[in-house]
Amino acid sequence: MDSRVSELFGGCCRPAGGGAGAALRGRGGAAPGGGGGSKTKKKNGRSRGGKANNPPYLPPEAEDGNIEYKLKLVNPSQYRFEHLVTQMKWRLQEGRGEAVYQIGVEDNGLLVGLSEEEMRASLKTLRRMAEKVGADITVLREREVDYDSDVPRKITEVLVRKVPDNQQFLDLRVAVLGNVDSGKSTLLGVLTQGELDNGRGRARLNLFRHLHEIQSGRTSSISFEILGFNSKGEVVNYSDSRTAEEICESSSKMITFIDLAGHHKYLKTTIFGLTSYCPDFAMLVVSANTGIAGTTREHLGLAMALKVPFFIVISKVDLCSKATVERTVKQLERILKQPGCNKLPLLVNSDDDAVTAAQQFAQSPNITPIFTLSSVSGENLDLLKVFLNILPPLTNSKEQEELMQQHTEFQVDEIYTVPEVGTVVGGTLSSGICREGENLVVGPTDDGKFLRLKVCSIQRNRSACRVLRAGQAATLALGPFDRSLLRKGMVMVSPEMNPTICSVFEAEIVLLFHATTFRKGFQVTVHVGNVRQTAIVEKIHGKDKLRTGEKAVVCFRFIKHPEYLKIGAKLLFREGVTKGIGHVTNLQAITTKENGLEESLGLGQLSF
Image (cartoon, rainbow, N blue to C red):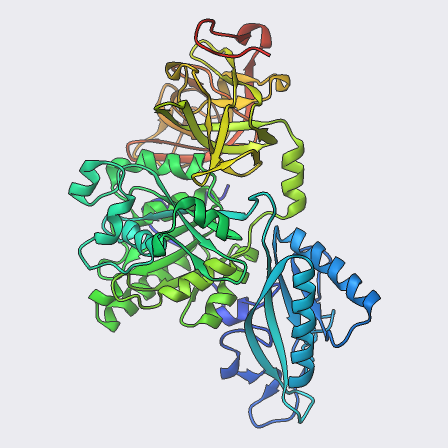
């Protein structure tokens, strides 16, 4: 873990060489033919006023992944057509229901282009292929290439999206970060409700969970909002009086926003949201009129420490002059380019930029898209929707399959009691598959034991679901199971897994900030996944004390009860202004005989 991340908590990031266009040459590239800003330098390989230069290339086509190059698809034979359909199924599987086709591009990445007639015939064939596999196509953008021809020739980039079977739509989780009063909840309200804000916070009212949040206008708890996109790339939200079930049924892709608190006194809730809910991406919201203020820098540092890819939204541009917005953008670019960050900011000003940003963002960890928008006037709101629609998942189907082959492991993040349903737990399935009616064990309890229980029913995105797969978040109804036996930080696992728990563990850490020296006996709040508990420093290996920026292997001991941890898990600890990050390297496991497997009789728990 790079100790330079520590500078983010007290300031900073490193100049990235070259402009955005120079770096945007990864797979699936900037716009075909050179990206959003290519026209100002060359016109796809030809210098202004000159003859053909080097022919323009994309990176060669990869066998894996969801991006396919096709030179032309004009009147294929039946055998060829069936082969193309099989190929499309593979690309869709790799992209978990999404694929991008570049038409007019050779397999080596050479941008050849097609005539108008050939392109029309190729798109017709592509549409037939998509219909065969139960998918829709959407043209993302077109480019002219003319480096070696007098006839205008085009290449076209097409998004193919399948409607997944059995409710298995593509689901991406986006954590929403930013300082208090930066407009996070209002932006989510506008995106998910489909109505612009009135400038006085009307859009955010549906997101608040408590009366004091409505009265103060400040989020203090974690809430979830959903935004869907159908197979044609159209927005599906709560407008037109849709219910959550209807949104799930109509959507091929779902964005789940995790609305986190911006105020510093709710920082532990924000950290818990980032560590336990395993977001795929983070959206950092910055107010245009205040710039980088309050907890903005700290939230940026948390996202970087936990290696969550983030993009930035500058809100409230309707309140500011153009000069003020530009000043905030420059302030952010300066922060992003300094040594602790080393990011390459990409300002999104058009649909073309949004497509480029979405494709590059998932492939290159250094690129950070920046949007400037208003939740009141709706300015540039569509650019964010285009970006979210095209944003690909971070994991491919192979990684997903490997996770699903493992034992069931469900992290307990929330606990509720629902009338006529009983005890309900919310969380994320880390690995395996969980089915309705399945028998699991939950723990560890305060005395280190695991209790048997049965999953009565499952709800995902507020609609019933029979099977839960690795990486998906859901709520599980446990029937009459006694709620008092549960707490946040527990796990529900397969009985045959024989889970290991510990009170003492070692972690390799970097001390990001501490006012004096970090010594044995110091107490900190440790966050590891959904685990959050106070731990005491038992030993610092090879040193007596640590100062800001130093690394060491430290032995921690939980002061209340044992927890379920895994080697390699990311760790974050804090105490006042003291902060540190690292990963778990060793566990002093409590043996099976000690932790046992028990049933609490008379409480309605079910045995096998």
